[in-house]
Image 1 (cartoon, helix red, strand yellow):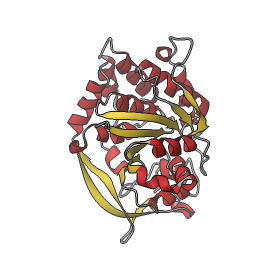
Image 2: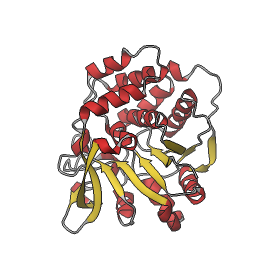
Image 3: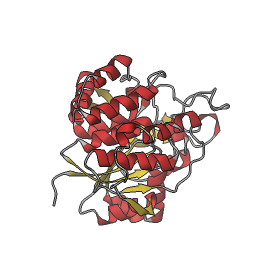
Image 4: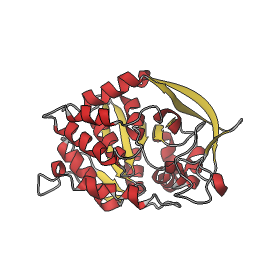
Length: 308
């Protein structure tokens, strides 16, 4: 049996989701079993296409990609989602006429069930979008819960404001985080399982901004196509406040010792003005949250990993 950690990636097509996938592909201690694209922070066809092209570029064309068929409750703003079209059209991803990375026939949720059933040992789910595909797979085949080693998830805001802003979503109180808000009911269903959850909430991602200086530093790593692609992706979002959300969550798999975790008792709010909030409550579902990270290590690590 392989000594590598088995990982199944479930992302939702935002700019940082592609970057997280690229980072995961650089980790020698990881065996990536597949990538599922959940249609949340993207338009799913270009997001699937961009994902397959990225795997081609990174010599990962043996890794299958699946398109999830799930749907959320509160759609992401179209201004966020259209980035999937831009990334899919970046010249560095379009140097070949054909895409080699396979798109499986099964839906993402059915593919998740299949991968977990067939895995020789429990699998880590690396989730950088909503938990809807995970919840749906568990509903299809409840027995796969025992095949999930843990869920590492970028989502939630525990003791800081959320990022679902009132001007985007009238009637909300600003406490929700988008990956929960898209489908809080599914997140709450995953909370009802016994699966270990390691969250990367806004509390910690607020400390790792994507600055202009950092993007330029990526750009100075010349002659590295992966670094070039990472810099181009981050350049798309540099005019706005942007943080290394999904990349910080994924880097945990590369070096858990660089992080401090803290246990919290929590619940997912599924209705009302706080819909999509991950609330700290006494007696709630116990989860681990990434609480602190060595920032200097983090920025150096992703620069190093993308230098290829």
